[in-house]
Length: 281
Image (cartoon, rainbow, N blue to C red; front, side, top):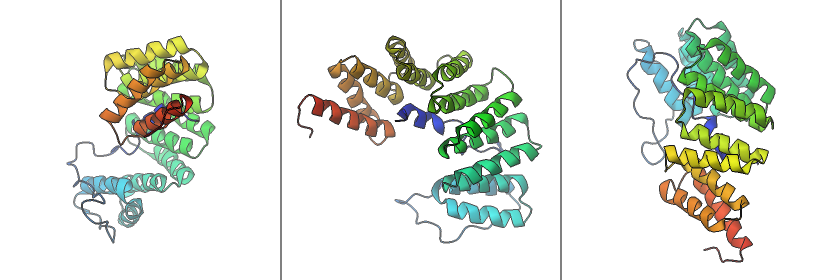
């Protein structure tokens, strides 16, 4: 089963982040089911404010990707160009058309005249979509190309290295994954998420001492990092330190009870309780 830390890494970097018009004012907050009702029709593009239209379209990829597709299509018909194509590609990813979305993102990046950072961002998004599609070689290729066009030593480089590491873990290339995480940590040495990710990779490799060292270090950087707590609990369970494992997992339920890590913690606690013959309430 894929380690939960990978899900956290997967879309914590470049995906669904604004790529163009970084200095534009933000769009209105996207609607949620508990607030405003869903849109019946996609809004029309505001041709006098393309940055606002772009951000609105990106918001819709998160909440109503079908409406984002409609908005992007209208905008493309009115010369929306690259931003409209980008939003359309991300909406396809959100609609689980992962391969089509990834292909379009790669095409846009190849044709774009934007900065290397913007093009690398789109390639990183393509890589993440290829992971979701189960196309690991294509994910690796997109991420490697992204790394080749951005300057070394940047936070963006570190983020894409972590993305590529997730691809390598999925492919069971654990030594190469750890090398990428090491390179990311050389750029962002206090990155608790990256340290927790490396702990997971070490655990999968069977190096439990290194895994525990990394999990402890991650929690030293951020004692409330739920990915590190989940991972350390997993390591404690392997070491048969059940009470300590449950303590870490229960802390996740206090910190972020609705998170994916909390769901995994509940499942782990239930399994431990069954193993010990306890009644799970």
